[in-house]
Length: 161
Image (spheres, rainbow, N blue to C red):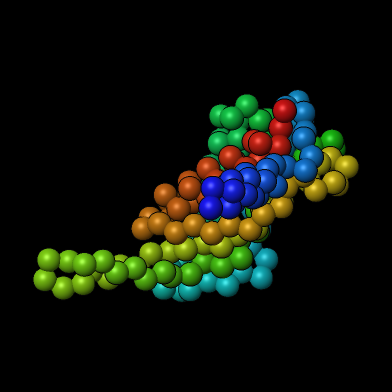
């Protein structure tokens, strides 16, 4: 039994190692951040067509600030220069998630927005340094965009030495 526990613990640790980025970039490398909504599925109960643009601008702004706070030189998509790494966040869906909890006299039902996205970091030569899918939900769209920026910023910052 003890050996089984050791083997399982080792397997979990090995699984954690695979989360490491495959390519390390220099901190001197500038990152250009872009957020795209190609082929986006969204619920009009959560956001309107014009609100989608506001959500993507906020994600981009918060992500640029988050990366700069972590010591990674970052700029928005319109500042791309030759030699920059490129971080692309593709928003795939904006949907509604329903949660229930026990209330004093009846169940409490809440609906909140959920965003599913894909983030890809390419080095200046086009080599993929990071590629992952994520999802996040929260009661507030503003907080939701901040949480996505924090999650992506954390993963991207690990790719820099």
